[in-house]
Amino acid sequence: MTITKNKTGDKLVLALEGQLDTSTAPQLQAELIPEFDNIHYIELDFEKLQYVSSAGLRVLLVGEKKAKANGGKMILVNISPEIKEVFEMTGFSGILTIE
Image 1: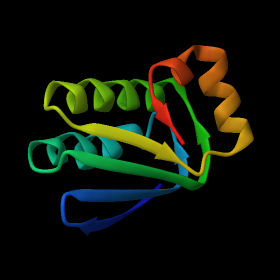
Image 2 (image 1 turned 45 degrees about the horizontal axis):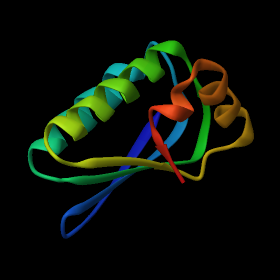
Image 3 (image 1 turned 120 degrees about the horizontal axis):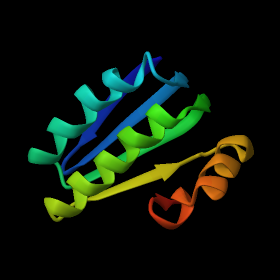
Image 4 (image 1 turned 180 degrees about the vertical axis):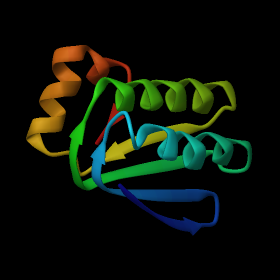
């Protein structure tokens, strides 16, 4: 998976490309979680993300909890219908902010 960062003021966009699975979830966690100490608005762009496994879902849940604990916000954008279906089936669509 490739993660591209774009920081503008107090907003950080992480564009994900590839698959968010057991082998790549630690990479996202290492990039995402520390950012909430400095940034209060993080947008995850899923436009080029093809797959999310349960390990990926766990990292997104950890990110959501960290954002709320720090008074921040994490938003997911450009989600494919396939990944959106995974969020709906697992109940994550009610936990995560999806636009």
